[in-house]
Length: 98
Image (cartoon, rainbow, N blue to C red):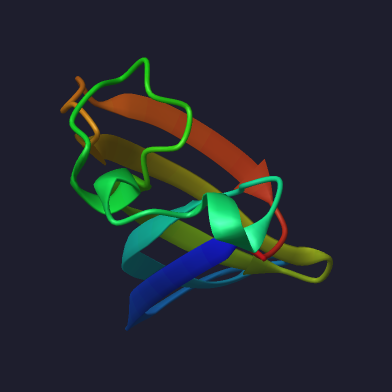
């Protein structure tokens, strides 16, 4: 497995009663999983085919966060950058990203 990620968290002074503070986050994630380390090749980092299961995937996104007692409530707009660019997708979750 190869996994890389970066986040930029932007706090705000806004606080919701009984919930918590509002913030924003921008992120980029990349990675993939292979059966064995020797199956990883340089072509996996340059392949642009969506059908290539070994191609390293890269996504980026942005969205608000509300800190709840059980973890952050998130709603993100995400774009896939590779292997082929895609349209934006809305995703949401409760809890940390990892």
